[in-house]
Image (tube, rainbow, N blue to C red; front, side, top):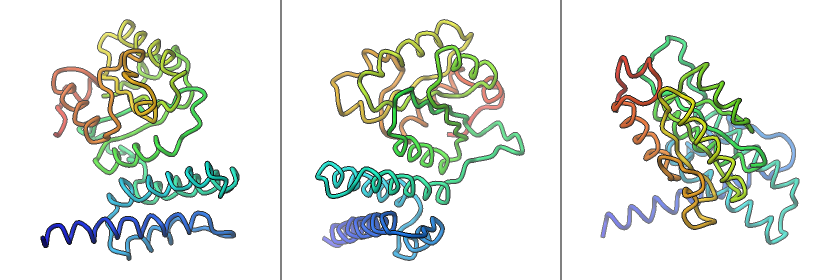
Length: 240
């Protein structure tokens, strides 16, 4: 009973912080990401809870309000951009200045035409908080993606997809990678499309389809141990 009570209080606190974030990102005038994060932390949550739970809840609430015509497109756009700005405070990019090759290096691809970028940024923040180095690549062609991987090998390529129409293009990219690279990194499909159509990975052909950042990272590390991904990391061996 005590455990259930604590869980209820924890869920209530998450909703309270999510509501606070929504109010702050919709307020008129100046907005401070640092002050908003500080306020959320003072309410008793840790950074993981804010990234994993509160920001997605606030984002869904903004989207629902727009669908109900309670918010304008401009309000939702500004609010989403501000939520995205919180991530730079909560999980800044990991700069591998010391060339620490033990940290997994991941490439997060947002296909052409995908305008829902908050979700990929949340995933990027979740991965960075787990010591992964994450780079984003927006709207690449198949050739551009191949060139990027040949120039800077990655330990995994994650495709964020919000539109079913994009799946075939992702499938062509994945097929090209598997046929053109000596050792193709693991490929992972995620995004809203997983909830929009049945079996979206039949078109994409990724090695894994999931919206769980931890599962995606674990899969890349398992494949890395098996000899897939960045050559430098294979020589040293990653941490799991």
